[in-house]
Length: 124
Image (cartoon, rainbow, N blue to C red; front, side, top):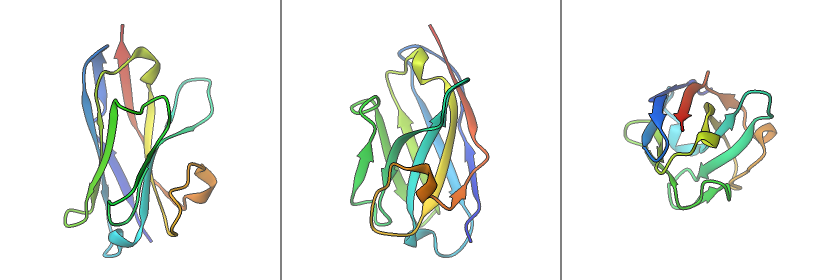
């Protein structure tokens, strides 16, 4: 089992940057593909980015390509989401999630473990 704790959210002006972190418990972190999702008020949760267990493969939603970067440090049991050129429409609660398997899934139902979320607010 994996427990996930996100941090790094906050209030930032449009055009600014934030780096989210997700710390995982357990000795098998490096066996899990990791994903970031977000949920804006009144909207469904949506896929943001995913990274393979080794860090060698990544996948991004079209809305964040070129602005966000997902990475991981297996020695620290941590996955990161570097967010640059932030826009007001990026405002949401951001969640990290973990799943076993080969595919870098974009579907939240494919992820077995979730963090509690961290709020990101981008002001215009």
